[in-house]
Image 1 (tube, rainbow, N blue to C red):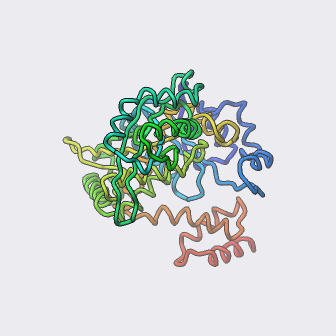
Image 2 (cartoon, rainbow, N blue to C red):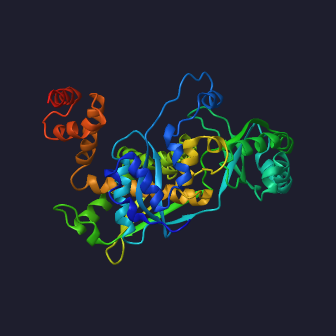
Image 3 (cartoon, one colour):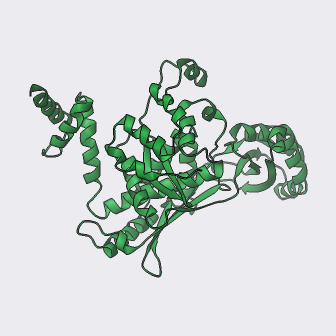
Length: 433
């Protein structure tokens, strides 16, 4: 990534749409020749949309915005986000600006191995079958790679198996299962089609080796061999807010994280806040946000209880340290990334990162989102920021034009009952003047 001049992004939220695009060009995040892509709002054509899904009748748009101020592993980023919920982009940008002053986000990504499964039933001698499968691991891997030689030529492919025995469960009435995991390096692709092809190809061999019956062969979206971790560190002096001291904010934030670790009811909302940011960039980048959501929530339950995905603790010197780890089965090629103008623009704005770097960026966004939410919750409360942006949404719903939205929103913030009826009344009075 080339050197960025982030000074052009100052007061980004106050700029007009045209000014924001020009600021991204001046800052070095957007090439000038790419700006014409915004003329049609990054929309996909009806022909492309019709080819993407069945029974297509229209397209459905979401706002495409930019979170600013991100410093990740020493590099500056703007984060493209596709989302309809107010305050998410503002919260991410605010947290990133603070974290950037103290070294930014640091990340680590494990080997990018995706998982495919073949599920066998009616295996007559489980222990013997497991031993045979281990003895034939090389042959199984070779058969999988022969089913998709192109990924092998590019340096990827299957490279190992894991065998799991699931005992019968009398509670739900399920029999025992023998499950073979195939670990696959899919390079820059998320790899669903690659893995599914491999899994179906090795079914006959696995049935022959075990004398079992294959129920199915398919990828798993629980990508436990593809984990991304983001961390950040903030001094107490940076945490003070309004009438709250830095020590109070730190200690209350740590307590808030702890309750999300022990209470599933809180953990669900806590993790939803993390996924606000993650889903938005995953969707913008053309990746499968549903797969990411499912994998993240499964990972949050890996202890047997649903818990927080993030952790916050006090360092020996009193600093606040945050950490977020989650599985991220994402790609930078294939699927809609290849043709969707919004996805292509998202990758361009990020500097066309490889899949590992994109994982690091996504994890950092999730941690930023989590920090902003927790800090607000343990100080002034979450509603103050939400209601300000809710006022703008009500103004839009009331029919306010671009010039009238801020006027209506400003007045709405001063009334006791902030609702659509009040917004319409305020707009009516403004239009009379």
